[in-house]
Image (tube, rainbow, N blue to C red; front, side):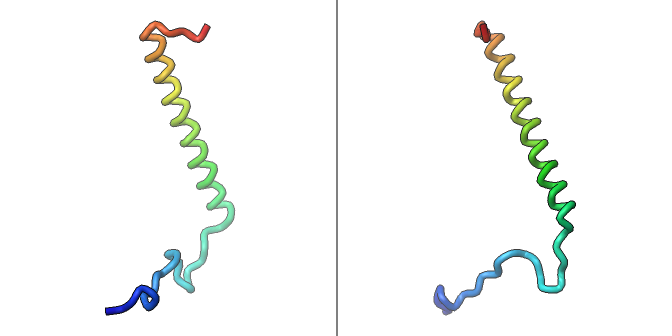
Length: 60
């Protein structure tokens, strides 16, 4: 039985011979994920606003 100090943990999933995606591709994914999260937040906020209006609460 191996001890905890003898166990090797592979960090990351990239092998030595694999190349990383280009900076532009990684930046594009960042922008896409950010945009999708902002859109999702807007949808949830709109749903809450509609539910609050239906319950008789108003913003003014």
